[in-house]
Image (cartoon, rainbow, N blue to C red; front, side, top):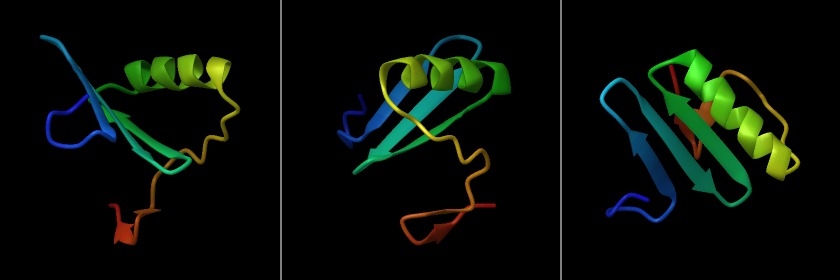
Length: 65
């Protein structure tokens, strides 16, 4: 968990970075490598009902490019 925001989770090691942002019932999962992102999505989907919208276009009124 980030020391600046309780809704931001960070996993960092020497070779990669994974970020998970939680807002109400939405998750934004991002990182350096698509393989690692897919592993996290698979783990989360095993525990919770989850719909993957694939690419993020807008989050909390912010357009993502």
